[in-house]
Length: 304
Image 1 (tube, one colour):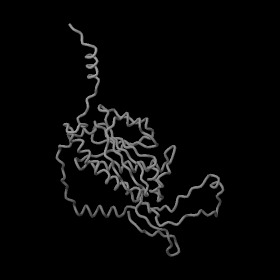
Image 2 (cartoon, rainbow, N blue to C red):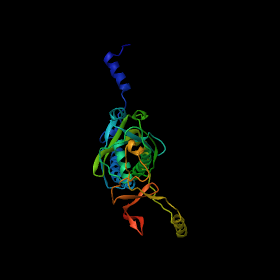
Image 3 (cartoon, rainbow, N blue to C red):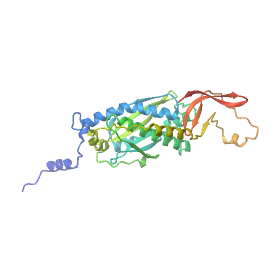
C-alpha cells in the first residue's frame, strides 16, 4: 500500500486543524441575514443609549456609534489599553455573554455630571474604584441592558440581564467555539467633550444562537386595564414618600487644610444656577438656590 506524500499529509493535517469559517462573515452567505439584522440593532442602539444616559447624568450629550468590526477575541483582548471596567450581559437562556467595556475616563465624567459638576474631558480617577463609581456602574449597567433590549426589539423581543462587572481585563473570559466577535464602539460627548466611551463585544456564537428566534411571530397583545384598579394604584403611589436632596457644591481641599478647620470657618461656594434636585438616586430637576421668607429656598428651572 502506498504511503501518502509528506505534502499531502501536511495538507490533510492542516485541513483537520483549521477551524470552519462561519458563513456570517461572508457576504451573501447563508447566515448573512444575521449580520444585516445586527446592523439594524446598531443603528437604534445609539439613540437608546443617549436617551437612557441622559436620564442618569442629566446633561446634554451626544452619541456616535461606529459600525462593528470583526475581530478574534484573543486579539481584541490583547489590544485593550487604558483603565476600564467590563460589564457582563446575558440574553435569552443560553449562549456566551456579551461584554461591554466602559472607559474609566467616561465613568469619571458620568459621576461628575451626576453630582452637578462639569466634565473637562481629561480628569480621570485612578486606582481602586470609589463608592460613587461603583454606584454609577450599577446605574450604567441597568441603562445599557435596557438600551440593548430596546435596540433588539426591532427584530425580536428579548431581555438583557446585567450580571455584574470586573475591573481587571485579565479576568475577562469567553468560552467560544467561534473565536470571532463583533466589536462596535460608541463615542460619547459629555459637557462638550467627546471621548471613546463604550465598546460592545458581541460573540458570533451569540448571534447564531438567537437565529431561530428571529422567525417567531411577535405577540403585541395587551390586556384591558381596569379603571378602578388603575385609580387605586395611583392613590397608593401618591402616598409614597421619596427622599429629596440637592447638592450645592463639592469642594475639595488637601489634608493639611482639612486638619486646620475650626468652628466658624467659612468655605467659599461658587454661585451656580445648575444645582441638581435629586430624588432617590436620580436627578429629577435643576435649579438655583435663593431666599424665601427669610429661609433658603430652591427654585426649579428645568425638569429632566
